[in-house]
Image 1: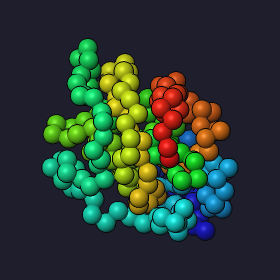
Image 2: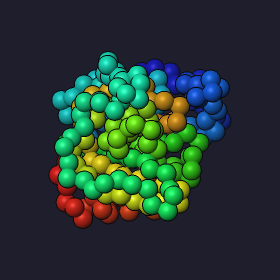
Image 3: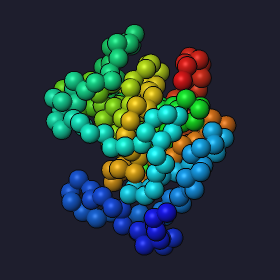
Length: 223
């Protein structure tokens, strides 16, 4: 097992990734890691850290870096793993910015969450999400955010709904993991978590995310 003590000490640590301005980010309260054996049990909560340890695979899908990650808005716009879905037009309401997020579920029923660095926005844990860039579809944005915030490569499988927030209108999709490596998460996340359904509403501390789960359950979407 790699020694995480120097990088992720209890008194704070530098994130191994620089922010968009090339600056070092201090994680005030690092997220504790879990034994890799936690990933093998569908009833257990499991955690990966930036540059930390990762299992070789889960549910017959290997954890390995996404090799052909899009490098431009144009490439993201046409990224594979978008799907033809019955979803309504997506237009701004009340002048709010458009955003997209993704609920990623494993075949064992656990959900992938991210721990925003230093609980940004008041979220201790949440789903990957971010604002749409000009020229990018909501699906492409959701796939991009899953990669940047969780290190995961995902396939969109269903439309969950649109959720109005204080400053954004966010469209959420259901997705499945098809590749990627969570330990390569960008600086916006200080941990990536795999959470059993029964623990989900406890780990998700923000009511905004509870509304997403309620919509997901109401639609009875399959994993």
